Amino acid sequence: MAGLQLHRWDALTLMLYCVCAASDLRRAASPPPTAPAGLRWVEAGSLAALVAPAPAHEDVAAMLAFGEVVAHYHARLDVVPMRWGSRLADTAAVTAHLRAEAERYRCVLAALADCVEMGVRLPLPEPPAGTAAGAAGPGATASGRDYLLRRRAQLQAATAAETALERLDADLAGLYRDTRREQGWFAGGRRLSAHYLVPRPRLAAFRQRLAAAVAAGRLTTAAGAPLTSGPWPPHSFAGGTDGTDADTATPDTRPQDTASAAARSPDTSPPDTPPQIRPPSDASAPDTSPPDTSAPETSPSETCVPDTSPTDTDTTQ
Image 1 (cartoon, rainbow, N blue to C red):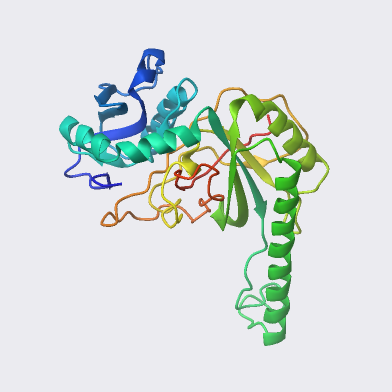
Image 2 (cartoon, rainbow, N blue to C red):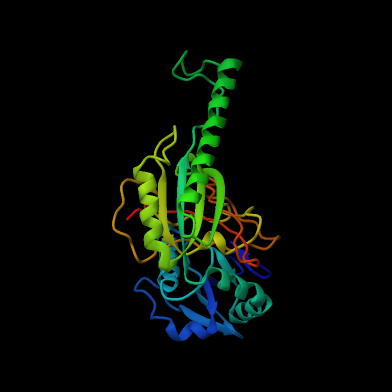
């Protein structure tokens, strides 16, 4: 988005948390106890952005507090969640950014209206290594045949995981508005991930059907059990269209996924999550965590909503 910069700490002083329709501010609750000093809404035309002075230190506590604020307002309003590290110089720059991107923000808000994000990650086997560790010793070189056999097993596992997610899409049909798929590294391992944009009224049914699929073992791969997460603010559906910056530009602040088991009672309040907003072409940010995906899903049913990505926690609650 024009004007939005990431990780230029020396020049940018206001952190952006989320964007909503200005008409919704009357429903905005007071900030959570963990909110930073100076948190406020900046209005420009039909939009409003939640901002606060950028934290002095980029640490885990600051990132978690950021996620809590976004989740707090997402539970009460339709918002476009920003990713951690989205900064602008001052209030005038925020106003200019909202006016320049007004059409796009309105489009995204319409697409994300009354929705949360749910995630499913299927573990995949590691790519073939160059050594046959544990067989002929740590320094032994793997034969070409061993490599090809492992590579074939890896591709077969990826195909099986894709098939499992396609079956899950069918099982969940009618309970989500959009889905996106991605493959990458998360929590120290390779995962094939699916992200679902779920209307809140269908969330309980979605979680119940997902838990049934997990309990029946339909999502377990040769590499292990699935990880489920959510509900989150829909960061994976809030940004660009190509997913190239999905989870690589900012650290993931969400709690780590845990293996899913049988259905648990649904959690009605979405946990915190780092938003995902596509940075401008000139903004580069270091990748601080293994690319998980962190790129989820497919293009939304609404024609003007773009794509983005990010991460999770145990959600079959």
